[in-house]
Length: 352
Picture: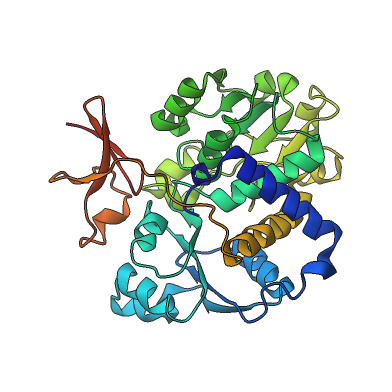
């Protein structure tokens, strides 16, 4: 499960229904993964994603191994991603990986003998957060279509934003309002996906301007760890802050989501507003991940990578954050169209 694009819409809906059934009948699933082992390999910090995966596996009756600090593993000795994945694949039935390099999960899947779940690869994708968001919206809004979705903050590096937009374009009638500074605008490849799907979207620089029309507001923090320098981060932080005054203009049934952690982009006073959904969202995430783990370990044929025509090239990906920049043994895999090649790992594009 590298990208939610690997699933059909009916498969996504099936996972949502399974998550809700687990939520309604948790005891019916408490032994479902007994005897199974999940490895969590977290190369960068995490609270919710790591702990929700661990909670999900324990509640299904399985066991968990892994690390949450590469400094305490052989990675600190220079072990390659390939070697780590090959070894851990011999110990576990399933590997969950978070890595700061974009495309790391796709690279890991080349060498793993067991299923890989992408728990976030740099500023690229975060499919299980998107599955969490879908379960949340389905329960809180009652539908996944005909929604006006505002996405605010770091749209350039926000992997949760990229994954959510890519998936919500597949449901009928959704439109998007992109709220960011020019420096943190959504990458072009995600805009191309919206264009190809025929989804309406507009870009604005004011949260006040956007909020009256929204059914969903997806807030994100400005991610210090993604910026090339402290100075560039300081110039962007604190630009968008949601407070009770701005919410006066919002719809009564607005749902406010946030992948968390928050820093200063949502005032604490907003937590008491019934439209604040982000803490309930974290609980939905456990059931979403339980459904995904259970489905994969039952051997269901979902999440099989698309059979896009790929080829090796003498070219190298020009994205400085791509996993190929550090794991030099990886084959240079690209898809090709219209005089442009797209990196299979990170979606970075290069003219040829």
